[in-house]
Length: 125
Image (cartoon, rainbow, N blue to C red):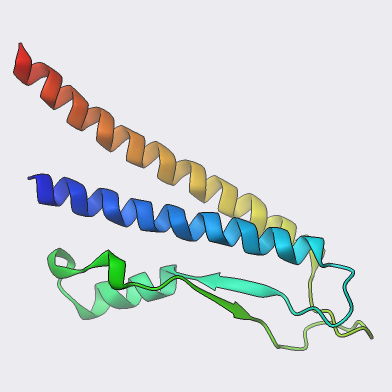
């Protein structure tokens, strides 16, 4: 039972790490909105997690082996002459989405720990 609880919390912790890093990367993108030649960066984790879930049995997944990757977006989606491809509206939207995701993950992790705490407390009575 402890393995199941720990495994679930470890996956939530890794997801929180990815959200935290994504927050930093999006903030860097926003801060460099006016920097000539700056290429926006992205964080990929959920894709790697989904890939691991598709290819392996869920009980045997080692979350520590799933990478959180930061990569530069070299696509020329910008019509700007300075070579910067940061779209401020898209970044602000991504920041809000990431913030919501982070809060949901924290609440889920806290709820799991509270259930575990409740079981321990009730066992003492």
